[in-house]
Length: 396
Ligand code: MG
Image 1 (tube, rainbow, N blue to C red):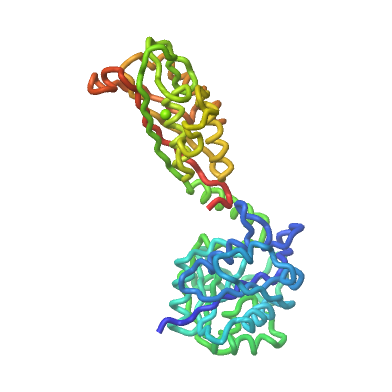
Image 2: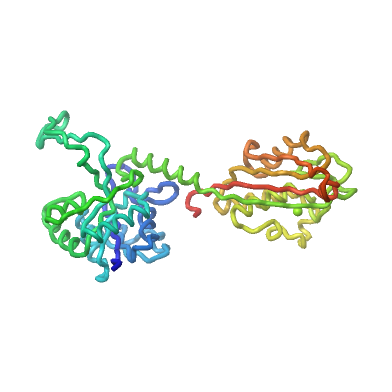
């Protein structure tokens, strides 16, 4: 039978070791608080039915608004003086139907769905389990009560038996009830598994995740920010654009805002800048914001004879407002004549200026159609464009 799983997110402390002015759990990493990242990981997990968040009493009385905007309701309760008291308060708020309870430290905001699943499985199989990493360092046990400066080594632990505890930790309802009862005394524990061991319950280790770091020191916070920035860069969106305009006499030929000397020009409602139009569609497409026709309809007299670079600049602003940065743009202009090569640098600079990005991020190539068809007979010009966007913090 699949267990009903509850998660307790322990965020009852303040993280004094970080030396920040706000409680540690509210510090933002990549535009999102440590607390929200941790809570979201469990709210979004398909095997978890309920989430209880334990906050310091003052925060629990006035919790951050984002906790009420999650896809699933979370229960916020006030913590106690020690971690185990906070977990006890969280456990009291867990519903009677939950038969497996995960306890996770909010200071580990990068917990993966896979690690949560593995911990649930081991907890369901064995009654008590925790994520832990095998030690890659040799571990020395210092003598108890020895001096702090240069303590004497008592012995070296066999490395293959040494594991470093992480969270989540998973307990059956019965085990957690026993732990909570045992923890009401004077004994102070840094994790719940230690209490389970002390109470005589067998506890199993689940392969942890090196990325599941605990943010304790300023150095940890720096590492977390670097990791969030790297994840950010990975959130890319690609878009494609295409446009075609007829070539007619008596109009200037405008490509990417640059007037290219030629005996014909492109026909259209605006200045018919086929390149600007295709690039506009590519960036709008990458941010899933429709196309040029939706934002700048050719039925609107406002755009008659309009400078298409204005539309491109407007589209770039829309893309930025939606939370994206333009990484690069590449376009192919299919034109039998005139030769575009002498104009490409000016066209690239013009597009880059309009998009407010470096010209090194804009590429435009000319291509003939080998004399084939309407394009080959210079009856029309067509452009294919692609754009790559990256999502900024908090966009997705
Ligand atoms: Mg067009």
